[in-house]
Amino acid sequence: MAGRICLLKSVFTAIPLFYLSIFKAPVVVCNKISSIQRKFLWDWERQNKSISWVSWDNVCKPLEEGGLGVKEIRSFNSALLAKWK
Amino acid sequence: MSGEGGKWKEILVSKYYTEVDARQARIKYQSWWWRDLVKICGDGVEEGWFQKATVWKVGNGSTVRFWEDVWIQSTCLKTLHPRLYSLSCDQGKLVGEVGSWEEDIWRWCLNWRRDRYGWESSLESDLLTILSTGSLSKEAQDHLLWRGDPKGMFLVKSAYSILTNHQQVSIKEGVFCSLWQAKAMPRVLVTAWRVLLDRIPTRANLIRRGVLVNSPLCALCNTLEESSQHLFLECVFAQRVWSMCYRWIGILGA
Image 1 (cartoon, rainbow over the protein chains, first blue to last red):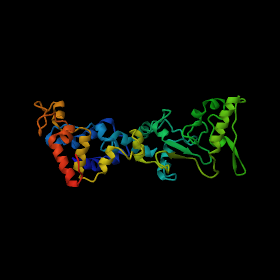
Image 2 (image 1 turned 180 degrees about the vertical axis):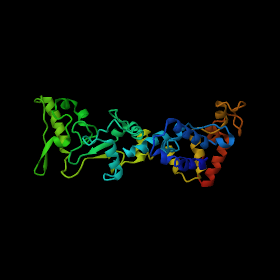
Image 3 (image 1 turned 90 degrees about the horizontal axis):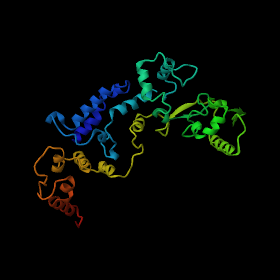
Image 4 (image 1 turned 90 degrees about the vertical axis):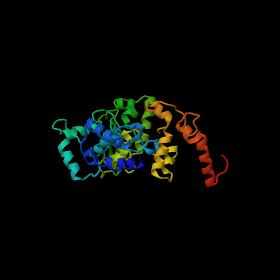
């Protein structure tokens, strides 16, 4: 699981980064991305069904507050876009 | 915001901002892209998150409004001294218009609609004390600073933490902080993290989620319910492991 967390943070956040820093992603797309991330984290590919033990909100919290520090896509999108302002 | 002379800023300003007032973007002829952006930054709403996170650094005072913009304190003077604002003749004026240069020294000059009463003049002296902390400079332009960063540069990281309402300064104590700093294999740390949150597939947890239906008793001692607390600390078997660990690293007791 630790390996998947690492990949989640480095790869799954980095892939949409370019688009997220230019366009406001529709809510549906954000939800879909989160959904893919969540399924990856809790190993849905192999078992096809698995319990998401920790809620996604908690996973997105920073490390000190008991999360994993994964970026929440919608807020991250807003933060990236604000730099054009 | 960053990069004053950048080409990118030139393009945006010429496309979306009128020359009359640099603050007010044109409503008409906006691209979808820009509209999304404005919406995301909470414009139009009086106190959008983006506005709250920025503060003006006054140069010659030719852009910042004296009462309405946030520049000298962390809130605008209008909300700080609403009474004085209602008496002021300078509503809507720029900072550079509320005072004048005498040689090289800036003198504030506030205009009022009528004389102040006793308690109002104490407010006024309050205001003047605040004003005395700030000064203008002839050459420099006004510019926006980002509050999330000591240097005033915009950071995506701080914007993200503002948006998610997480504390910006990380707490140095706390169990999770010491957990992630521990020198152990990542997979052990992740398991420890899940144990701390009680999110591991113990029998008690599995039954609560309807996965298992038979006994919730501990697989090792078979006497008590298998919760994560029991499994890692209270079980007889776990305690044997712990005491062996203690002996191994040379701590007596337990």
